[in-house]
Image (cartoon, rainbow, N blue to C red):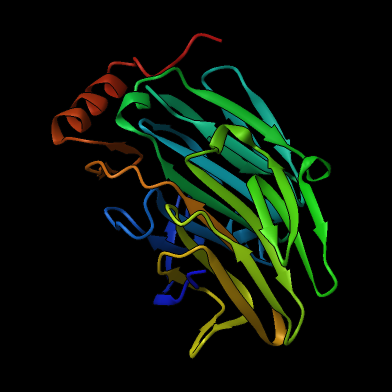
Length: 282
């Protein structure tokens, strides 16, 4: 068995996006060790003024978005005619494919917000496929209650300390898998990994250790290749998003909301958006 080790610890950076929404961001474009994960945004504030403006209508092409809410509510609307509302524990997935315009706005009753938006790349062969959307409420997620850990599986099949759990978002698999993992103080969880996958974890509460490496909240841990990653929670326990990804190994050119393989494709995406060609017929 090859044990994964932490090879890099990256802090998130304070930023703002949408209509002034305060976020913590980790940008991972063209990072071979995290491919196909492109971006991790954490939205977290008890103050509505930090997120009230939300993310008004904006375009995407060539990538997937996954919004996962821990606390608060978000409403998704898009140019395909979809509308979905998720609250604490729910997830919204969208494959932008050839192009779509969408918005994500906080519900009127949300006074405090904690959630994530993740970007996952699409292979070149799927970048111009028709866009798709799906939302999943908290009750639809896979749940695993271990002796000293708890996991909510959003996508993929996971084995933790010998126990398995499956997430319902099969659209993201096999390209990527995702769980929300809580580990009690001092407890250890061993996660089975496909040795061909990249594996990374964003710690959002507490801290974890692996061998001699310690990673604190608001940091991303990137692991070395292997078939098992063993993490131990520090004082106060730990909460983290754990992701694995099947590397695409293709060029990545990102420009704002577009992720393509060449500069020419980016320029075409801009022209298509300006010409109104990203609006789909419901």
